[in-house]
Image (cartoon, rainbow, N blue to C red; front, side, top):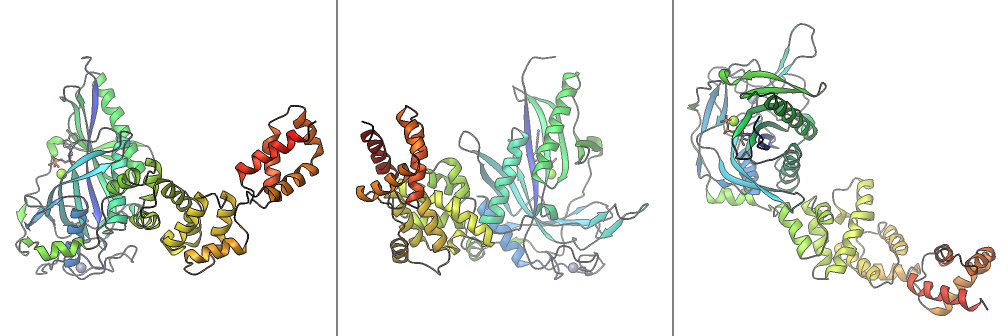
Length: 489
Ligand code: ADP
Ligand code: MG
Ligand code: ZN
């Protein structure tokens, strides 16, 4: 055995269903869960003489996805027939792209401990989906559902640069965030097969020389399956190498229940797809106007939004990631804070991620902005920051504000005044609450005076209770100490 270290190399091929109303080359509705073979026509069934008509909306969404992932969109791309026999492919070929894909050279930044890594993307192509074989309904035969035939997909291919199963997962999580929430080109429902990945893995020594592989695990349709299947393969390949074998390239399937992979075919059996140009479709040309239309309203990438939240607004990387979860939430925070400075940004971010997020979820709303206009949140955060509201009274104020329609900053002020929510630092009033708390607990006062100083926190709790949360904590603590001491003699 050589003592060179072993490294893992992973590359992904990801298929994502575009959120169109109809299929890619015919007018059949693109719906999930319709009764089997009810959403089909001569075109998607591959009947002789049927001709494809390219769905312009699918092209727009594919271009939008490419732009969101920083690809160079090709002015001209071409469709080909990829020929193979499989029961769920009634035409006998898939219309896809090959030598001239829709886009090349994209990239996606994936978060990691060191602040993020750029994963280069090779190509993005537009293609149709195949039908579905159903094996678990009848004892001795399989069923076919052609509803999925012809649904529009994009295929995204990474360079082989991912270094661990968890990084592959992080890549897919980020990819889904960009496509579903930022670009909004797909619903990315993985349980419905709208985002699925083929994962390629090989082992290399520290000089980059291949020691095992490349193994391709096909058709993984959850983040957990991708990570587990790759971990299983990584261990299996490493064990083979340790035994002195150099396992060859093959295609495998993952059995999620057994948490094992099994061989589907070896390298010798690599399929010959006999690619040929699709004679019934002209080259696909993308002009300036369609590029502009596809880019309409596209937000910046989440990595960029996170960077701005960290560098410009002073959030921690964890806070920034949670705020940038959706572009709408990030825009809401930025509209709230404007140029209010770092402390205001952090205070507002705490409110957005805490009480506002909880209430949004409870009401099933899409955005925190639907609960409270930015100007009102800004006023509240400012009062909290100035110490006029305590954590508790700010929470109470929010609760009351959620009941109003579109409250303004002056509504916030009015409510805080009319409900007496401001913190009180005024000594006479504080003294009244403190004396009330001490009088109610003479035993504890004795113990404090006998040296049990940690009871201070207990008294503070009582003072807060007496003041309904309005006592200014710092001023109250000082006065509490002084009163406990002064009465000692
Ligand atoms: P093929 O033409 O056989 O499909 P590609 O070169 O197009 O192979 O690569 C397909 C996928 O396999 C890509 O995602 C790529 O990153 C990945 N890949 C290529 N070589 C390796 C390797 N040595 N180890 C892991 N993944 C790889
Ligand atoms: Mg391939
Ligand atoms: Zn059809």
